[in-house]
Image (tube, rainbow, N blue to C red; front, side):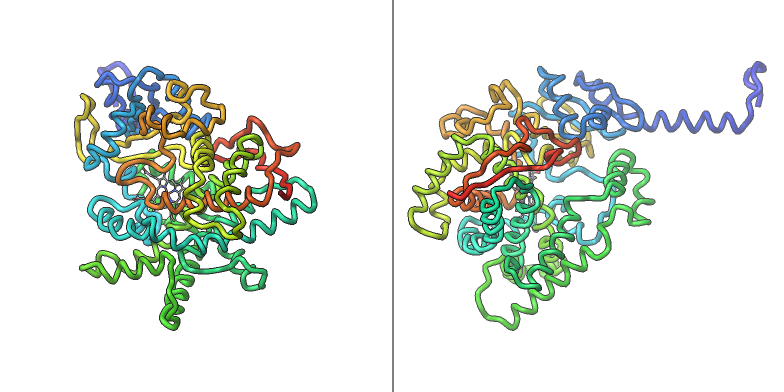
Length: 504
Ligand code: HEM
C-alpha cells in the first residue's frame, strides 16, 4: 500500500500497526475515569494499570505505599489493568460504601465471569445480590452468641493436642517453629465446629484424618503460583476468561471437593443413625435448610459449598491471628503477664474454660485487637460497584472495584500515633469512643462483614487463654523484632515464627 504517495507500506505491517493501536486504545481507554474527576493517583500504564507498586512490594504493602504517598487525599484513583479501582481512605466515605449506601456495593470484586468451580459459586463469599442476601440470612443465625456458647466445650477439646506439643517443647527446653502447630490446632477446631469431627487423638485413624485434612485445607492457603497467576491475569485482562474457564485453569486441584463431599456424606449418614444432639454448623445448616420456604434457595450443594468455606475462610485467618498474638506475647513480656493474671483471676481453680470466663478477659481482648491492628490477616477488602452512583461528588462507575486499604488504615499515624508500637490500651472503651470505627476493620464492617466474627474471636481467645494459663511464651534467638514479612498477599513472617515456652 502507498500512503499519500510517500511511503510504501506492506498490508501486513499496516495490519499489525492497526492491531497495536486498537489494543493500546482498549487497554488505556478507561485510564482517565478518575483524573477526569480530579481524583489523584499513580500513573497508569497499559496492561498493568497502576499495579507497578504492588508488583514491586506485594499487594498489601504496595497499597500501603500508595496510601502513604497520597497522604492528604480522601480517595486514590487506581486501575487493575484497565479496570477502575478506587481506594477509599476517608472513614466517613467508607461508612457510606460499607453501610449507608450498601445497596450499590453489595458484592465483592467482579471477576468477569471467571469460574473457580461449581461449589465456589454457592459459597457465601462469592454470592451476589439477592442470592447472597438469602444465603446470608440463613447462615447468619448459625453464628449467634447463644450457638457459639454451646460450642465452647467442643473448641476446648480440640486444642488439647496443641497443649501436649507445648508440654513436650517446654520439657525439652528447645526453640521451635509454632506456625504449623497453630494451623493444626485451628484445623481441629474447625473440623469439630463445622462437622462434629473429633480428630485430636493419638489413634492411627485420627492421625490419618488429620493429615488428609491438613493437605486438603492447605490447598486453600497455599495456592499454587500457576493458579495465582491465572487469577491475576483474569482480573487484569478478563477477555481471556473464556479460555481460562474452558481449560478450568482457575479450578481447585482434583480431589479437594471430593474429599469434603465424602466427609459431608459420612457426617450426614452418621446423623441419621445417631439420635444424639449435635451442636455443629452442619447440623445448624441442615436445620436452617428444613425451615426455609423454598427448598431450592438452600440446597445440599449450598451445604457442601459453605462447609468447605469454613476451611477456606476460617483456617488461614484464625491460625494467622493466633500466630501473631503468640508472637506479640513473646516480645511483650510485661503485657503477657497482665494477660496471665487476668486469665487466672477469671478461671480460678477450674480446669476447663467457659464462655462466661472468656467474657471477663477484657485485657486479653485488647491484646488480640492490637495484634490484629498491626497484623490484620485480611489486609485489603473489596467491593464492586453494582450500578453507576455518585456519592460525595464522586462518580463510581458500574463494575469498578472499591478498595478498603485495611493494613494502611491500621497503620495511619494520624489515627494511631506511633503505629508500629504495640499498645493494647488503644482499645480501652474510652480510646475506642474517641476514634471513628471505620479506621479499624480486621473483620470488615457493615452487612457484608465476616459472618463468623464472634466464633473466630471465641476460638482465638480460648486457645490463647489456655496456652497462657499453663505456659510462659518466650522469645528465642530466632525471634525477630521487628519481623520481616513475606511480599505476597498474606501476612506471614518471611523466616518463620520461632519461640520457646516454659511451664508455669
Ligand atoms: C480471625 C479470624 C478471621 C478473620 C480475621 C476474618 C476476616 C474476614 C474478613 C475481613 C472478611 C471480609 C469482610 C468484608 O468484606 O467486609 C470475612 C468474610 C467472611 N468470613 Fe471471616 N474471618 C475470620 C474467621 C472466619 C471463620 C472462622 C469463618 C467460618 C467459620 C469465616 C467465614 C467468613 C465468611 C463466610 C465470610 C464472607 C461473608 C459474606 O460474604 O457475607 N471467617 N472474614
